[in-house]
Image (tube, helix red, strand yellow):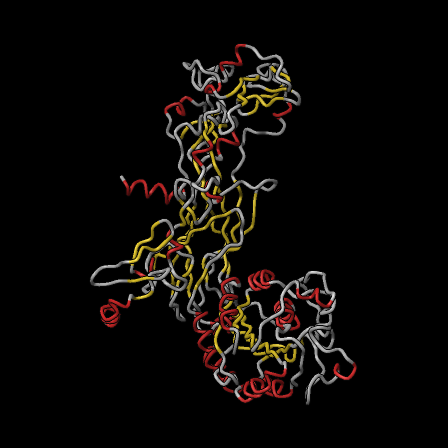
Length: 630
């Protein structure tokens, strides 16, 4: 029985359907937006004036009484539009002049009904020798002098490392200091041109060398770049990072390449709001402002970007940022948690480990396949089903990928809500280099809701409304199931009272919790709602008094949880919260997930602690070390 309940949870994403939830939907559109409900516009042998429920549970025997062509029960479907074969290697694609294809299919049309998942099989294979664009963005404030000289001397090794990874690499170089404004830079006439001994004039960001294939030119440009100086400790790196990302043509980012920025610094960064110190209050506009000298010349017009803006543009541009830093490690570690396309690594004091750091970080990036979708109305669950290193688990990532590896996913797409004002959406499900285009049509309306029919006067609706999908749609200033009442409630009669009873045999109007006004219940008990004042909203409250724990919506005593949460009142995170970033197993394989939190194993033989049960307890350390070795 538990297994069957779990199956229902997977199929409907935790959306429980009360037996009477269909019965209380008053029109076709509301009906079909409840999973498991179907609408019948006209029944065989039943007059339209008779009291009947048009919204039925799928499988209800009454559905057999529905006339042919009068059933509204949209179903999910998908059609594959483009399905090109996967590429073996970048070299083969270059020879044939074709695009490198790593994900299959590439374009799918879908029809989705609210709350019902649609499955689609995807395949990803990492092509050999995928092109790399590496842009080295360096802090050239005075404290980075030895780092700059080290980078110039290691330039040949850096390009050699890229050659080991792919035949199709480009490398570029940019530098930054800070906004040339007080209090960031000393603007005194004696200091503006030479802020420190042997230093060049301060500047915000300069694109010293656009991406290209000449490794020796890279080392030359780094060597020629002069150190400058500023006043305060944080630098203007975010201004530079924004320009390096959005100036696609000037930096020469290629369409098909792993696009990487190595952000090298020994200091913290200025961010949105700091510009006010110099009177710069206009928010960063996320646009390119490089002049003909490849200099950022709008530093005095726009504030520094925010962390959120950097996160946004990196995802939009499919650019990955490696923060290579020699100080403020905790800051940059936390920064990578909010900038999705980023990682960080420690530079030595003079950056002599930069080649090793870039190689290690690149290998870490390329070994992960991560699928994501920016849509605000869709929920996708990725079930990874084939690959030695990745067991079939609910995840959006697969780790340990190597060139030539292939992984198969089952993509489950679910429409959480029917958006207002749009009936379709184009969504990209993306990796860092590739994307699947989903052209989605929302099945949120009924064919019987023809706009022309909504203006046709019907006698059944007391000539004060139109008959739409078997029920009355009242004209302005009229209401009630048969439009017999005016908007102020006058005109109600005994017939209308029958419409306020939960069942034909009931003697209570509005469940005893409301007034019957023109065949409709107006609830006077604050916590009750619904067609018959039968829904107790308090059943959706958490212990803290929040509706569905602020992680869902209440639908007649039941919580519909947003993705990532479950439980009676959406109080629990799903098992995904118990999986450490970069790990396949829940609770590191050393515990169980209960309500989104790890309960770690702790016995005489083994014991673990930590958020993900990743730490071995001291009292059983020898046992843990032994099991790790074995």
